[in-house]
Image (cartoon, rainbow, N blue to C red; front, side, top):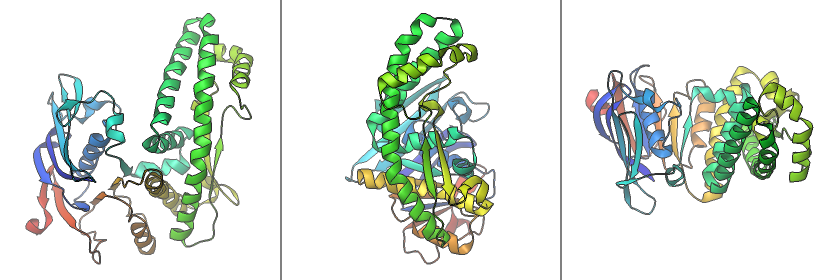
Amino acid sequence: MRFESLKYRNFRNIGSLEFNSAASDVVLEGVNGQGKTNILESVYTLSYGSSFRTQNFREMITFGENNMYISGVVLTDEGDRRVIEYSIKDGKREIQLDGKKILDRKELIYNFPSIVFSHEDINFVKGEPESRRRFFDQTFSMYNPSYLDQIRRYRVILNQRNAALKNGQYSLIPLYDGRLAIYGLDIMKSRREGLEGFKTMFSDLYKKISNTDKNLDIVYQPSWKDLDSVDDIISYLESTRERDKKMNTTTSGIHRDRFTVFDEMGPFVQTGSTGQVRLASLLFRVAEARFFTEKTGKYPILLLDDVLLELDSDKRASFLNELSGYSQAFYTFLPRENYFESSDKTILRYIVKEGRVENAEKAN
């Protein structure tokens, strides 16, 4: 699967543009602030129906404009061509696949999977627990539709329970507790099962690319520790209800779970160097891609946003070698970066300047 072409109108700093992207590797070169990341964001948005940079989709509209449109022609693994269109008009978002309106983004996620590598990925090791929860929820959802449904149902009930706590509607809490326990228990089981295969793959990758024997482990620490049944969780929620009332929020549950990276000395964020933490963070994404392929037999699209600069030449070469399992990759590079001199892959190179894209060979 690959995007054969991309088309824009009023997306970020890109006014009107269409260019060919029919290659296994697409290199976008230019100084910072010219629009390279915007193009990666557009591919992700067409794949997921949402941005990896903002939750407010209106921010993607060019300043001073009211409407926005992006589209992509995708060549599937089966040889079919499909058209994804994403538009914002009069403050309303619409997504279409082959001319038919998409009502649930799952139709995109499972058909056009993409994985983005960015500087913010360092939060997978260094950041708040929410960053790792979000990462693993996305990773498990990519191959398991029922997991995404579980997360959605849990969030609905959690929001209703929190609203009841804030509004003093305490008679509703027991009803929400039962449903929260059912959905939460299923999610805990899915997280435990999914993490087992993922962390082995992640640890092996780290050893190989770092060229060390350091063992990294990812430990799942559920908020409802040692609670293995719906009844146990309901009882626990009853015992902490007064605390929840005082805090006006649900203080326990899978939305409070933690995933922590350890080495032999303790939490890796404390024991690892800045370079080691950065490498481990990037390998979360490599492992995500491999894990997805292992579970589905499909290869994702990779979006790499200036993440190779922070690796030394040896680790960079090893890192690129481990990226072999993908259907297409988009890279953003600064001028004169060249990491594919010896590659025999089909590469399209573009210069990006002020929201315009020009073939690199013609530009030179």
